[in-house]
Length: 140
Image (cartoon, rainbow, N blue to C red; front, side, top):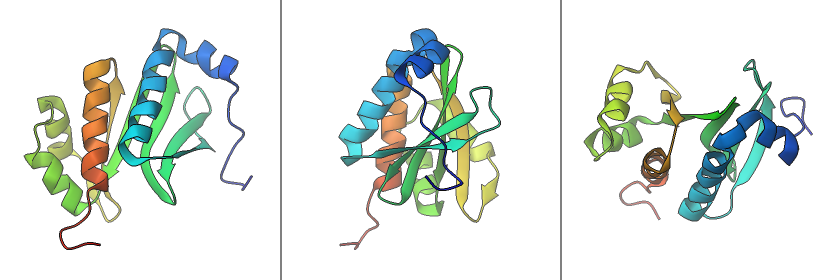
């Protein structure tokens, strides 16, 4: 394990912390895996209560950040300039579009964070991952 990573929580530890949000966590991991194929879950230290954040990665690319909270799951996604434009033109919930428009723009991209509360939010995450991983026109 590199110094920037941390030991993954046990299933029991994650389940105890998430409580009734565990199925949402599992649905997110499955949805992203179905979207892009096999993914890696990399745990890093965090200042959040749980002390860790989970990065969902495809090869070296971070697709999402999952923050386990008591009975909740927070998701963070960072979109590059092209993906941001696609997301703003997509049929996403108004709250997500507004968050993207109001978010600070950095060289690394534009990031938003939101709580996933059910199937509709999982579908939104799935759409954001699809946009983020969409090949650029002319890419092979």
